[in-house]
Image (cartoon, rainbow, N blue to C red; front, side, top):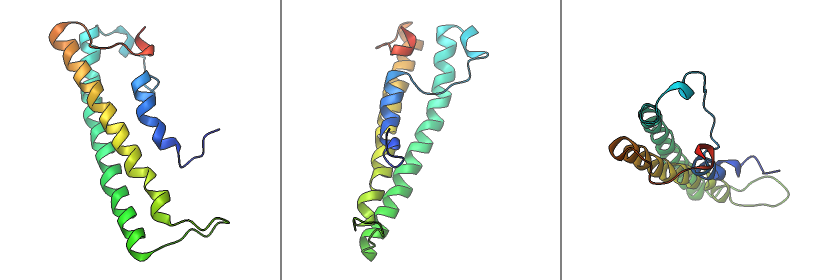
Length: 121
């Protein structure tokens, strides 16, 4: 079982493997190029969310570093260390989102993807 705070680090991996959640009611009926167009639109929102995680998470990291906040649990760890997971996770999701967008654009332009995820096999 993965700790709740560390799950955000797995978002980029899940996206790379094609294990993200999607509603397939209409999506499966689309052509491959139409699916890529829908994925591009969704990818833009993904980059917006990932960017927000990086910016807001980094501001928390800086804030907790500046005030020297310490966690109150058994192991007194600086809070900035724990909060650094948020911008790192957002960065990983954003980078994988960019790779997915490039693959979707290649699908539209060339008619075939640059790589195939486990979901598409």
